[in-house]
Length: 321
Image: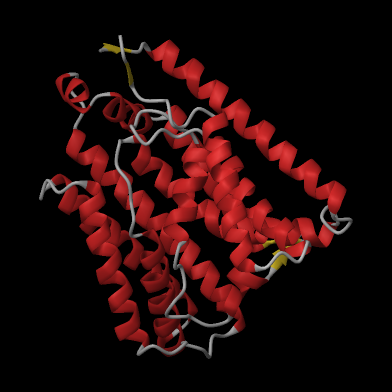
């Protein structure tokens, strides 16, 4: 087996991202043709609002996938963070609740990082366990019932708009810019890619592998918490079953956007495009009146085709000689 050069990996990643954008454009054109409502201003804003929740989680997922790991706990983290944020906000005020929700996401991210780095557990196993624990804690905390009674200073973050653009979309835009700069312009970003390209090689090159991987799961937990808080604010209540299946959408968005599950490849612009592919499919199929159980089949089939077209099944950090 021979290891690919950085230029080869960059070229492959670039081709994958171009394929992602072409697929996104093709879906947009198809729905614009078959549904007159699809390109209306109201529907575009609705699409952006719906997609922002997936995209925020997918951004955090991208960080873990680049290291060669994965975070299956993001859906449960979003639910627990939203529930705690709502519960604290009702009792002690909005900003106390927001801080508590963010702290919850950071805490779960820290636990995942500690289990993976300190406990040497595989990311799949560690985050699967966290997923179950966080979901259970959400049900215990909410007692299986929604937490309501949120005031407008809380719901503002999910249902208000600025310059006619929903606040969650602005949050996504800011998060996208910051995380893209982290990956492309900082030492942390360079080290994340180095670890995904070869953990032992990165360690020999002087990279603090434990600290960098820990940081990736902290970022993932933070992004999941932001999504959970926004969802709670948008619904005006914390739902105990919120975020179910969100981890699958986040993984799909990252992979569709060019991230390789083998690690070392991926980026924020591609992940955003992948998120909009998923969001656009759901939005367009809803406009066409396709039943939800049929949508799952259609989205699954399109996902398989899209991954094959973008080369997702073939790309690894090593090629066979």
